Length: 113
Image (cartoon, rainbow, N blue to C red; front, side, top):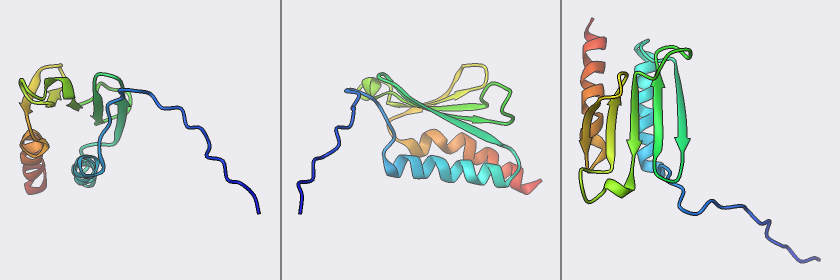
């Protein structure tokens, strides 16, 4: 029939991103916070140094929380960081689950009210 030529895809070398399991965990938490009526919007930024997931109460504000993945800090403080609205690091760690724990505890309080 014919020869199939692969389409050249531009790749950015060294770009940091979330893998499927990480993104599933983050979006699951985001969906539960939306269902509780707390978050309404999100943004993702993937660069050379970090991948960032930002969760907003309203789209016009600063993000309430930012979840950052910085592989360069893997052997030091941990590559995951939960950063609050004021820019302070709320939690940092090697694994995503414990870093998301403060937000999940807040979700429990929201559901109880």
